Length: 200
Image 1 (cartoon, rainbow, N blue to C red):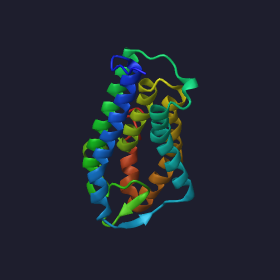
Image 2: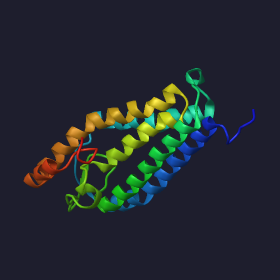
Image 3: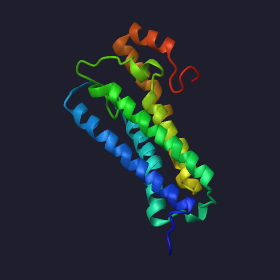
């Protein structure tokens, strides 16, 4: 079977995969750095584990299966360059936001609901604009995915996957931060939005 880079379906798959690899590269150093700073408090639970697995499946596993095996190809649909390029822009924006967010958090970053020893509330830089820019980046990824991947299941699995994690986790995360930082965090919540600056 001939594969053409001029085909928006093929291009969308490649762009999505490049985005995934870029995210892994962005995450590599912060992951190593944060591990050196011991966890002082955690709110990990079976629900947290479940939501992370669902998110990982929707944003990674399902698309990879479709791209490399063609499974669920019965749910393929037509693609065009306008949608593919729009998805690429959203995904690129997502990666930029991931990088900015990781840089702002430094050693305070954690993959799950953890607080590090000497944990400080980060409210500067990107965090001055929005409370959860890491989630904003994941939402951009999730929304970009159906524009890049011309399969109803692989495309929308990201929204379902990350949406599950977001709605199960964000309240628990904010409760944890409020317990740790008290009025400082409550004041911070009053002047910021969760995902979209000034809107939501």
